[in-house]
Image (cartoon, rainbow, N blue to C red; front, side, top):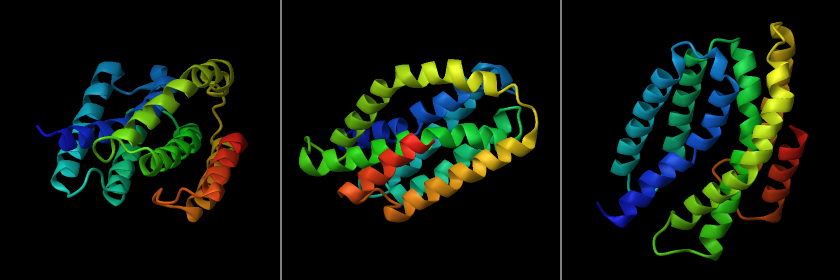
Length: 195
């Protein structure tokens, strides 16, 4: 396997898995089929995305990734036993960190490229995730887990709608993470603080 193919597989893994892992961690007591089956199904989806991405020219296709992100969303909704609006509201909380990571990865790729495209970006995403992991776990334990006790659907619908609106506005500025401008970083940083 060539280095470029390995970088593409790594980027496919790192762009979504850590963030989706946080969602499954929040709902770990609400999985329909238990942790082992959920992880196995998720790995099948990752392998499928990796195989498809490997067939596309270049390291990683953002537009193709969008299709798979919708697939991951459907998978999350089917594997977690909760209102869809509750899953969306909690899941969308990972989007600002994800978007900020993608923007930082894009900046790092243009400023400090390593041997092959995608290597710097994948490392930056992993590094930012590791930096934010401890605060995210603390936030999950102390803020989100008590909120999971809310069983009414209406507040979750409002929260999911609010988050979708903020994310949509931030994505309008740079939907495919192609810009390295200051306004993109500011919009994504503000999004991180707003949610």
